[in-house]
Length: 241
Ligand SMILES: Nc1ncnc2c1ncn2[C@@H]1O[C@H](COP(=O)(O)OP(=O)(O)O)[C@@H](O)[C@H]1O
Ligand SMILES: O=c1ccn([C@@H]2O[C@H](COP(=O)(O)OP(=O)(O)O)[C@@H](O)[C@H]2O)c(=O)[nH]1
Image 1 (spheres, protein in one colour):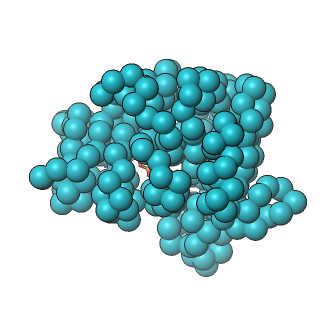
Image 2: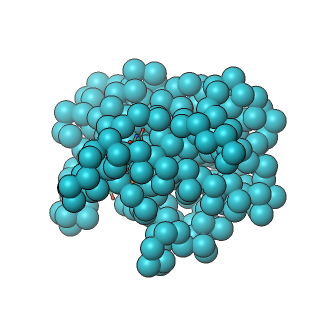
């Protein structure tokens, strides 16, 4: 990969990781650092779409485990992603980068509704677009929303910034013996059920030929390097398994 390979990227930020050192909600310092990194990518000429999870606030599956109706829980999870997106929009604008939240659920007094054409126009004008409320449907995840939006906007890279350094042979949080994969095919991720991203998201990336890079959200400078085409974290790409 050469420098500046990627012109339009979709970045998926873990909601859960936004907790950082905070006891609940969002770690303000971490948010500001991430916003500064996104700003560096934009200054460097990349168009950036962002999907933020909601796991620091609510997850439908967790609420359902406590007895709540699953669809209601997922709706709360989607609204949680809107809150995170608003916080990031604010942080980006304080970092000097214009940004627009577009929600898959209509909340007209708070942000724009999602429209692919308007999203692409915002990106062309140098605005970061924050795709909030996931896909707008229950039973999906923000990983799937990230793949979906990446395909819709024609992103040439999807970056998943999460709590681990990349993709391993097993969950590295549970199995310290897990082997790190620098490069891996979509097929292998699916066949070996490598759990770093859900199956729907991986299949969408595979079917639309979108390269996927998985990297650690806590590594300073990692995003700028990923956008510049540096071999950081793990890369999922087409090819024989
Ligand atoms: N094979 C694997 N390689 C890497 N991470 C894995 C793997 N299997 C499970 N995981 C776990 O997946 C997590 C990332 O997915 P997820 O919990 O959906 O996070 P996020 O909040 O970023 O969406 C990692 O923190 C890691 O513990
Ligand atoms: O298209 C979507 C995306 C998200 N969610 C809900 O929003 C929650 C937060 O998203 P996610 O778990 O993907 O966040 P992350 O793991 O990135 O923090 C999910 O658990 C779901 O309950 C949903 O119902 N539909």
